[in-house]
Amino acid sequence: MKIRLLLLICFSSYSQLFSIGGFGLNLNQGIYSVPETSDDLIVLDQDVGNIVHHGLNNGYGLGGYLYVDALPFVDIDLEAILHFSEYEYSFQNQVMEINNKSLAWADFAFYGTLNKKIMKLSIPFIAKAKFSAGFGLNNHTSTPMINQSMFEAVLGGPDNLSDGELDVDEFSEYLKDNAISSAGFHLQTGIQFKLLMLDSFIFYRHVFVDDLLTDITNFGSINLRLGMGF
Image 1 (cartoon, rainbow, N blue to C red):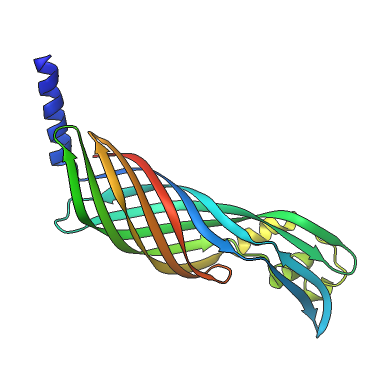
Image 2 (tube, one colour):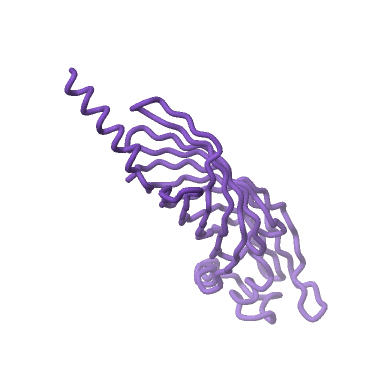
């Protein structure tokens, strides 16, 4: 029993003294709401149809992270994540009508953050917790939202908007070939729990970025991380 206790104390002390960072998986839920919009299709001052974007709410992400806490004043946090959601659209012109068709929206994002420790708690030899806040930069590559330009490209030009028949499968090629790049900054705060070599985080992040979500320049997310220290 004494030997087991001694090994536990040594292992715990080693992990806490020599751990300089960690890595693992990140789960994310976005907090945003894109309102429903309806736009007429105008060609040569003529109304030839209509598009309805039925709105987009929240979404989920999955990615990975790596952090380094060996620096004296701040921790460096790097994260890559794929965020995805689904929304519905309707389309109508002179020859066809589509109602409430589903379309995916995806965003591949990279976050780089400097975190500062605010408060630290510990249970000797067993576990510890750390509250922190941070600031960083982010970069996004996302699929475009549905609009008139998208339908013009898929239908073969503006002349076909009034009487062209939509091939829904063409959307996948358009989305891949017309990805949108955007960049911004973010603030985040949360808590890290560490049990021996096991890490878990829960934190809130608020992102400020243009050209990512229609008519939205900032949004929040709740993040849960599971990983291990090294």
